[in-house]
Image (cartoon, rainbow, N blue to C red; front, side, top):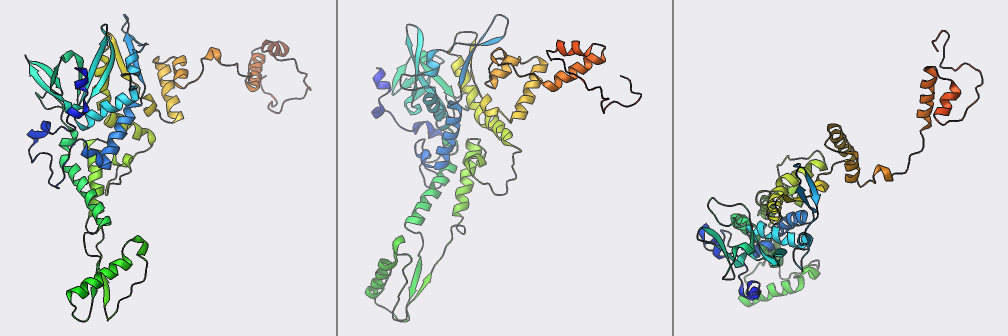
Amino acid sequence: MLASFFDRDARPQDLLTEWGNWGGAGNDTSAGMSVTTSSSMQLLTVYGCNRFIADGISTLPIDTFKVGSDGVAAESAKPAWIEQPTPDLNRVAWGGQVITSMLTAGDSFCYRVYNRGALQAMIPLDPGTVDVFRKASRKSYRVNGIEVDPGLILHIPGVMFPGADRGMSPVEAARQSIGIGMAAKDFGGKFFGQGTTLSGVIEVPTEQTPSQTRDMARAWAKKHGGTAKSNLPGVLQGGATWKPIQLSNEQSQFLETQGFTAAEIASQMFLIDPAEMGLAVAGSSLTYANLTERNERRVQVTFLPWIIRLELALSAELPDGEFVKINTDGLLRGSTATRWATYKIGVDLGAYEVAEVRALEDLPPLSDKPPSPPDLVKQIEAVGQLIRAGFEPDAALAFLGLPPIAHTGLVPVTVTEGATP
């Protein structure tokens, strides 16, 4: 039975049937391109944005915490399945599959595997193989047409319509924009590979027969066609002249269409700042004061909605009182001065212990730190304070572990006549 769940030959590769209620002719777009979950990845912007988010989140460390009787959460031991969700996938590969499913299909499904009542693995499923339906008012599932115990399916939906049982596919929602991008890429390939307009015309002063015209065109193409022959000098006889026809890509708005569509997909479908993908947006005045602000925007706007969904789903697999936290501190770490200023505020407010701050900065505990050499300037200042307080100079030196030193008897230059000793 399990083999039939994961039979790749039997399962559909795209959510064709799930998109039927969106209107339009199947998966076709106004640009004449068919957009599906797999074909959309052929558009580099969709692939790049998906990888940007999936890799960015799946490579973050995952910690587990347990709330004690005092209400304080402390880090706890992680179950083995968090670092190795399946025998074949570590948490990075597993997280990439789960997040990619949500980004493209709108849902992620995993099949839970138990051993003696303990969760052992969570195997990602192709969303196209899963049918969600209601049975006795309970959400139920079929995998490749086989009904499965709902308790064995982990379902993480993305954005949902009210009353819906599964998430809304981002690829379907952006189908028209993706179709335009795919059409522009297709056009570009044909433009540079075949040419969509005449490259030029040969004008002759006298009328020619069809065979003469054909022979002249073929001879010109044979001599000057292809990149290796493009720099050969042209030779025309009988008064014939060559007139090139030029159509710039800028005039046909080809490059502008590509750039606008890519920026639209990045910013509106994936909520990624187009500049993060190397896309320039004409007329945009969006700037960032520093790298810290860019990182904060990436975490809060782009990553956080998916991180929270993943945290909630994984926390539900733990015993009561325990939860999962995906650590984004590494992405939010600012400059050295900013971090240490933040630490100082935390220590002053009692939110941090010095030992916690040192651990965050990968510094050894103070007990393991070798003693610093004495600061001679501070020792001399301390001797002066003791002397001014009425202590004997030699006793003050001895108190601070300094040897006695002889004095010349000269008046120090800092002392003036009449000054109070």
